[in-house]
Image (cartoon, rainbow, N blue to C red; front, top):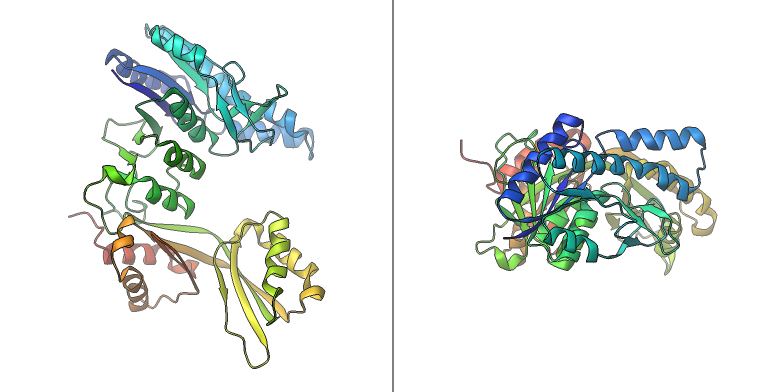
Length: 407
């Protein structure tokens, strides 16, 4: 017998028939003798609808009341799934975030889970009852409902699995696992049987949409084994596990891309101590996340150019911040380009193999794709290129690293 947390996303819960399908999957696990807790998302599109109501009511809605509204989508699906499970002949009940409780920080709409009291849920599960818990929500110390931000249900599932000391956390989505890249771009992409936490975290951070970054961070920290599966097929999924569980390490696990990038170049920055800090300090104060950074060697004019990337949605705000600090820094001008994309190759095998970056650079050069910026980590190399070459770059690199599935 195993203890399993099963998480179902919005597409899995989109309507009564799909909820009945979820109930059937849960019943199979229970009939196999397992103890089961389920985390559910709101129905697909429901959270956006609720957010829209809040914005219509007030452009500056009280964040505490905003959370009360948007958390209600998961309350509906948890109750409906409990009803469907009961109709299927199982013992089941819903447990809202405040009933456990799931204790969080008081950062409304982006709260962090601090503790989960599993006493009552464990007792119910030991008695053969399925616990259905809404994802995405929790409770502050002063008894106010909070939400965890976009993708928060994945985080809820991993946190509950850690608190319950579950054998694994099964996350059901509209894809049947983690692929070496987006199969819509590369039809010969391969589904991975296993991937390490580190690789999954890097892939999630650079554009892969399978799992939310915070959930992978938590799984790695708490050593929760996560399985990615499809709600719509019985195909085997992908296990996200500790590096020690993978005997044969692949050199590269996958190729990811992110089109939500914009490039900013600050031209003619005085080459003196503190100048770069004067650029990035105000951006950080404005909560603008800076990614790739390149600083050119100072010219004879004693100035340098600083290039960096920001999320495309933050480009206008970034330019406003830079305009405000121009008198202080004394740079010449700011250039920007939002028609760029970040392409990344990820793999723990990089730790012990040389030449990974060279393979990337040569493959792109052979196809006439110019690299505008580079950033690396121990298991990742990312480059910035013109957005029009995104799909070509992904296909070229997928082949260059031998990731294509056999025909």
